[in-house]
Length: 40
Picture 1 (cartoon, rainbow, N blue to C red):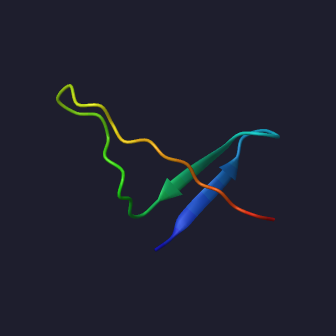
Picture 2: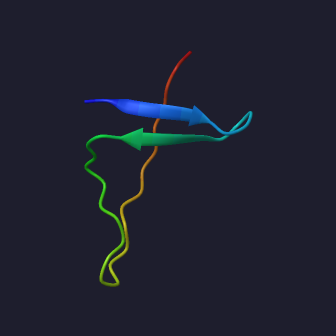
């Protein structure tokens, strides 16, 4: 599994995963949500 992280500014970032267990919104169903945590 791989992930790519782009730091957008001091507090926000964008994460791209090659695999995920989250589901996108489709057909009126609510999409999944979650969070990532990390330590420096």
